[in-house]
Image 1 (tube, rainbow, N blue to C red):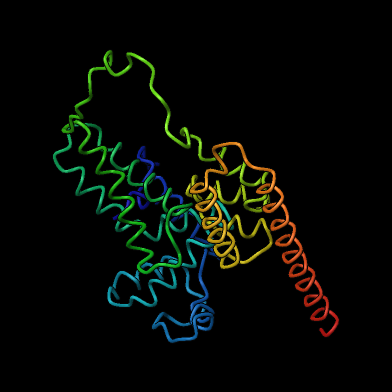
Image 2 (cartoon, helix red, strand yellow):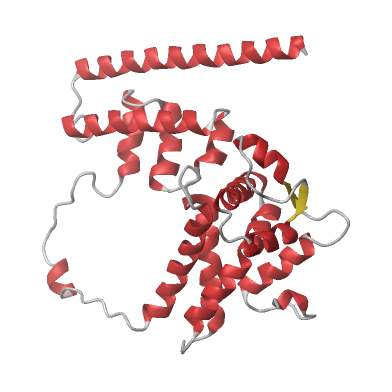
Length: 294
């Protein structure tokens, strides 16, 4: 029995999330997923229940069908995508769908723990939410396992914190004298911004690159904000990776850039901008044709 079945609101953030999940999935219009649409989108029979299925019913089905890997992956990709693009309601829904595993993880790590077990619960939830929001790669396999492992790793750090001793060098001798910083001087975001200014990468790709590569943000919300597909964003960032690596190897981002290099990269940036603008115009024209035809 979950704590949400009782009359008292729990102090643990993890179990409070379970109570919120129950509140969202009760009543005449509970949160649900259209399993038939999931199957149509993927183009295969996932073995899931038919039609629009309330989330608690779908959770019970997944628990009783541990071998339904294709169905579980499809459900969890949809849940993660909705949590990232639709906000709090579906974030709570995703936590509630994972609650049996999260409670089990918290219970395992709390056994024999000398501190407040609510700390374990809270870290389980924090690890899960961070992976849900940003770190879980929807293009990879076993999305659900990736999320629950993130929850386990986060809570395990709390459990092991008292047992870990990290040796450090003598602070006074370490700080004595001057130390030369290493390239890129601890601020790769500044190099990326300089790359955008010089035209090594497109200005429009600078902030997405920083958020995804350095901030480890999920690409889906960023792609929506840019008005492009996730695949298109991934390709843009991959091309930016190549140009950045070449520029760093040449030293053009960490030293004085020669005028001919500036002109060359600026010309390449203008050409890329023109190609990108042409593709955007083509997409607008295609949508207009579809609207007229409709």
